[in-house]
Every structure is written in structure tokens, then in C-alpha cells.
Image (cartoon, rainbow, N blue to C red; front, side, top):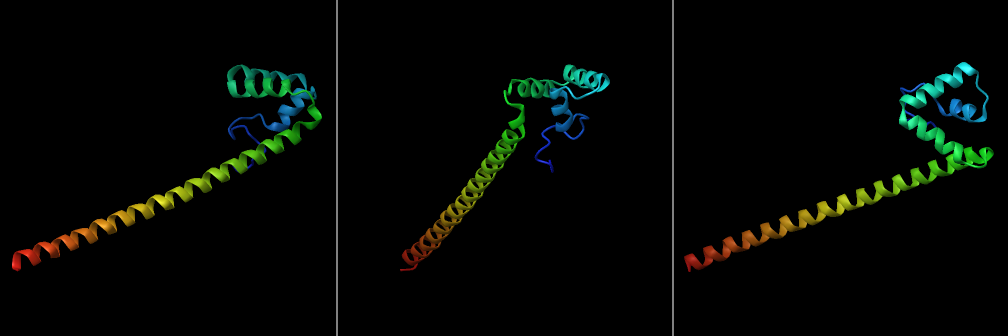
Length: 118
């Protein structure tokens, strides 16, 4: 999803600008009817409209959306960073464990050969 301000699926006709104009009542009857038809068939659109209708101050809605997007991006970045660190740590422990096992095998091999030939 290239545009983080448009939370709807790219295949849907309804975008966030149309959604805001619907909530403000700035659409023609035909456009309003089309959005209501989409709300009937698409639960995601219906939930989006219901959630936005609950918001008390419509003027600050874009500020809320920007804050939520920023927090979401920050949370995703932090999770990716933790996952990358954990992945590196796991690989290093595996390499250390394999190295120790190989060293013990080589030492065991030499000890057995020394006892057999002495």
C-alpha cells in the first residue's frame, strides 16, 4: 500500500476524500446512494463510516488519522527492528553451538586414536 493516507483497498471505488464528503453531506444524491450501496455489500466500508460518524469533532479528524498512521508506522518499524535483531541473535547461537560440537568431535576423535595406538 503506497499511500498510507488511503486505508481502503485499491480496488474499491470509495476513497477517503469521498468518505469525508459523505460524512459532511457534500455529495449528490446519486453519489450518496452509490456509497450506501457499497456500505451494504462491503462490511469494511460500513465499519469505516460507522466509526467516523462516532468521532465528535470532524475538524480534527485528519489530525487524528495522521497521528494514528504515525503511531502505526512507528510500531511496525519497532517490531521489524526487534525481529531483525532476534533473527541475528538466533543465527549466532546456532553457529556457536555447531562450532562447539565440531570441536568436541575432533577432540574425541584424537583422544580415541591416542588410546588405541598407545
